[in-house]
Amino acid sequence: MPSLEMATQAGVKRKRPEKASTKPSKTKRVESTDDIQSLEEETLALEAQVLESRKHYNNIPKLLSRANDGGVVTNRTILPAVALCRIYCRFYALDILDIRNAHGGNEEVIVRWLRERLDEYTVLLCASLRSGSEEIQSTALTLVMRLVKEQVNHDGHGKWQSGIFAQAAAAMLLAGEAVRAEFNAKYFSEYDDVRIFALQVMTESLKSSASEETAEAMLEVLGELDEPSEVESRTRLFAEKVANDIKHLLVQRKQRKAVQAAWLTVLKAPLSKQQHKAILGILVDRIVPWFSKVELLMDYLTDSYNVGGATSLLALSGLFHLMQERNLDYPSFYGKLYSLLDDDLLHSKHRSRFFRLLDIFMGSTHLPAALVASFIKRLSRLALHAPPAGIVVVVPWIYNMFKQHPQCTFMIHRANQSQGSSEGEGFKDSFNPTERDPMLTNAIDSSIWEIETLQSHWHPNVAMLAKIISEQFTKQNYNLEDFLDHSYNTLVEAEIGKDMKKTPVVEWEIPKRVFMDDDGIGTNEFGNLMSKVLECS
Image 1 (cartoon, rainbow, N blue to C red):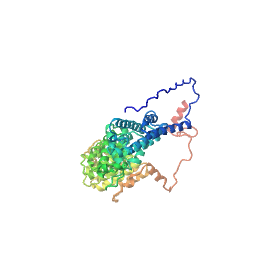
Image 2 (image 1 turned 90 degrees about the vertical axis):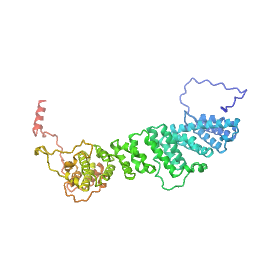
Image 3 (image 1 turned 30 degrees about the vertical axis):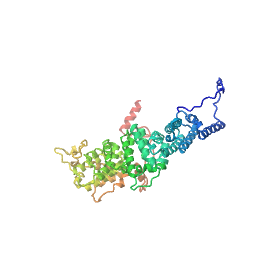
Image 4 (image 1 turned 60 degrees about the horizontal axis):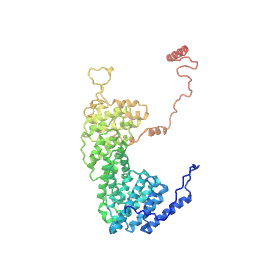
């Protein structure tokens, strides 16, 4: 029926509305405890009447109206919202909402009308999930999931994707971080059926309305997933009555497929730079294990690798994994790797990860000497204006490269063989720093004078370490891990922790003037000039 509003009883006089007082109230009246208790009793009475007899079904719109406060549920209207949840859970338990039990006529009209009010109630709860306060969002999540359980158990597993749950899961992408974390902890991580259908619904929702905000929400949800199990584990279901109908959807292969589709949708969404970095940071450990076809990540990784900067450094891990495990053929790999050696590399917080991978990439003894020499020369040049923590990584790495590629050791000391140059003109470096192809930089004909320059570095540890290039190469190799985690903090702490063998000499008497003595007479040429200027003024 379109409406179940009861007609006004005949003969009953309506009260004439009282005239509004023209006198402004001095203070705003706050609802007293008696008023709140009266509202609660009235709400409970309306609920009891609905459950007692169908002739009171018109109380449902009243409760809906009371629960709706500006399009959402609030603390003041939470009790009618809870009452509606209890009513509809009872309706499902009694099969009142089953259209098949209605034999046409008024019965079918009543069932359809009740379902329409349920749709309105669902919209209200989903709006509260998106826009309510944290307390209300938590309550709305509990209410909507109770309705989901009843609906799926009584209407069938098809309601996972077309019923209340589909609206609630889509609303979670726009909900607050706190309620999303609660959903992940209580439902998404706990129940296999909630997890697989939430992934399907959220994936479709993200495809239709992709944005940085929805992608961030999806990243939070997917971040809760542990690594997939290699064996079939015991499933835990939220809606147990339809377990047999969805058993084929909960196998490990189907779950992998759902997670893989969700990640691919996220990777195609408009992502911010920080989101790209977050994904690349967990790609090998948290994302790749879910992919049955890792080749699907190739385009994303190669595109990220071509971006440059920190994004390229982070993409190296995933790209190396595909090259090593899946035999990915990346054209001009070393040319692109060489282009990553820019001015920001030794200042980047991802420096340690890059050098770990670089040590692997350059470890092959079959690499051309000209290629290896370009990397050695480029990093030597970058070390001139790098922080001490970056230099202490470069020097041992260069030492290891000379040990692994003896053809490059001529760069340690090379006499000036330039034609027609005098001793005063100095050495003309043949290295071309602007050349992008590492095979054409002429680094093999150059020298590493930059490392010798670092032997006069202001930091004593750096200067001492740089001297290993000038000594005999008696050490087989340096363990690069011992140098990767250095920073300004570790260097300062190391200096502070040293025992002083000799007390340093300090200036204990602060002079009154810099260029003149205490009588105002200049002590040098500049001081005499300053005194004359002061006299003229």
